[in-house]
Length: 173
Image (cartoon, rainbow, N blue to C red; front, side, top):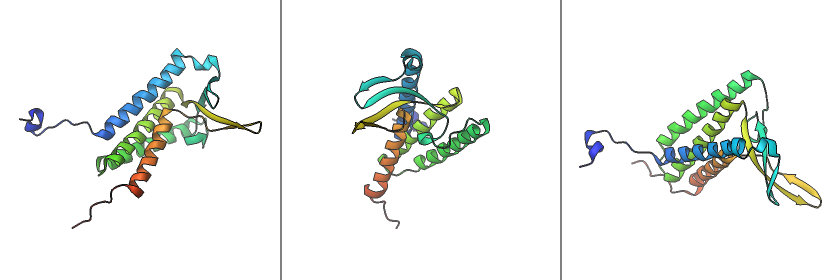
């Protein structure tokens, strides 16, 4: 006897949905802690290691600060594009045939939703991680990013891995 499964209704959390929810919760919890408990806005940059600092950056653009605009219409357009992308990725995830692709799509969806919540709540995405290196007396900085960004990049990398090196798709009869 399968309980709820015997009635034809079976509740099952898709691994991609679990990945998306985990990313979303961790991303938002980290940002809320940094903003309201750690109070990074008043602390300024905090050196964590010789190559990693915590900073506060409000990103009004898209990935890596591209397409920066404070125009409300541009912000609405970014939210609409992000919503369409999340729906498309969710459809892809629902039809995914490999666990790697399913989890990767979940990471991307969770990251996209996390950053969209920021844009809706604050008018910009909360970025806080800064990697840097000093060579020859010059400091080279990477873009300031957050956990949602890490999840999106990891998801894209996993999709690429799955596409090029993953198990080959079954041939049609």
